[in-house]
Image (cartoon, rainbow, N blue to C red):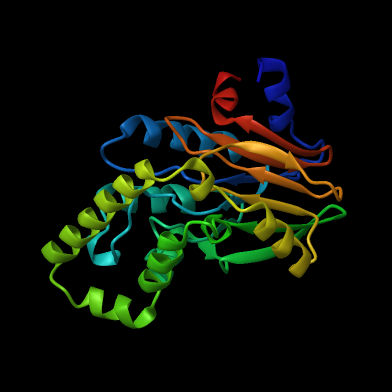
Length: 256
């Protein structure tokens, strides 16, 4: 996206009232990628100029293993989010589903359900991380149900920190290997699942991340799906303002 079109996203309302909602996902912040952290911090500063709300649809961090294991980076990001002048809403991803209410309070972030409806203009919008829509990946869905079990999570928190770190690293390694072996259609969202959830939720627009395949998908019935991308070091952001919805690269914000 060029410089002129990017400027559309940062125009202030004449009254000074914030005029845009922004959606992002799959930033995967980690100490190993300071370039992503720098890009994310700069993006937050840019969004603060006109954002009425920021929605983070999961995987803000490459992993989050519990408040007692929160890294200095994760603590710094909490402070950065808390400094934003607009509400910030968050949905858990598959990498940071252990992000707690305590962390959310420190970051001034509102945690939303894994599927959440909202009204934007005249449209009913459904937002979610996106992994629930990958219904053809049966192995992942089984693992997801196990990892989201509250009883198992309580047992996990009782383990020594070193063991918890080892378990998390093993799971990440296994996940990477499985993903490389699977066909792209298996790890992508299922079109029938998308249509079903839009009908069940009576929504016209779906916004999700997780697949790392940014796109805009018009559906036959006039509905639309916006897929957010992962960051390396920048990523795709969806903006909603008076002119509608636009998907653009976060790097375009920083050239203004």
